[in-house]
Length: 351
Ligand SMILES: Cc1ncc(C[n+]2csc(CCOP(=O)(O)OP(=O)(O)O)c2C)c(N)n1
Ligand SMILES: [Mg+2]
Image (cartoon, helix red, strand yellow):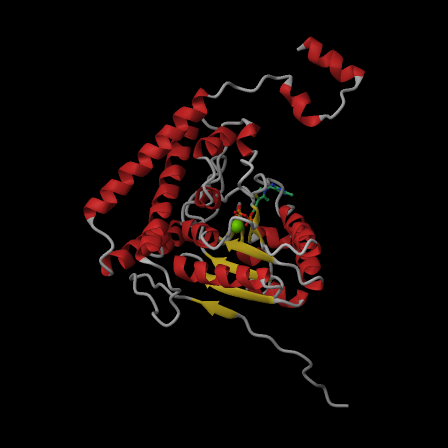
């Protein structure tokens, strides 16, 4: 019997906004000028937040922090596509998602300053706490999507993870379950090329991370993660498909971690200056700024105003976070146990 090809696949790749700030009109999502300004302002706010968080860490006023620098478009672009009733399962680097959703900024600082109360989302925000164990939020997202499907809620679930996260069993289990049950979930992989010091090519021999979805029976698409319009379009299409019962999607946002993994890392020990320099020209903020300028939406005065407003918003949030009364040591029992054992009661008494 001759051999046959029983299946073949292709991976779509979406690019809309190039490095010079020119957009492909045919692919461009329809967005009002006010909406595009809001996107740009969030990119600027996020970068300001990130820079100030790093300085606070250096001054000893904030704990270990995972910077977003370079990944702003992947986060803000996907988060703009989220609806109020959707549910979000982040990892530890998604400050852009939290800010775009309107998460109180002082609470984010409170969290990074070591106070866990900062990560209990207000009731009107459907976002789960920051997930530190790599990839474990992925099956949680599929579980939430399963619940939504069971209850016939017309919502989507979105979860975020990195290139390193795709090597975890949780990733494969979460995607498999979503594929089998056709769950309303969007998996967003921010492929920033590094998992601490492990380069992307050590995670998988596959050509793309997007193609991992094919094995589980649904579409994976790669987008330029530094192109906010491509990211937004791919995410809004996928979330709409999920809400409409079309099942899951995996989006691979191809981007770059411009900073160290966290403030506890020194990336110069394992990657070259040339590599980092080459990515600077792809800066997602610069690209959006050039687009805005070419389309009459940007002036120096506008930039100055939004820089000032962002700095003010961030420093106000820092002030609020630093003024919060620190938690009492005995609170760790309050938040952890429903009923205390006699030994724990004694421990509290000893505090
Ligand atoms: C289960 C688990 N193993 C190891 C770690 C330590 N760790 C923290 S981040 C990280 C790498 C994550 O890389 P990636 O998924 O690409 O995300 P990125 O940090 O690049 O955003 C590792 C190994 C962890 N947090 N959890
Ligand atoms: Mg990574």
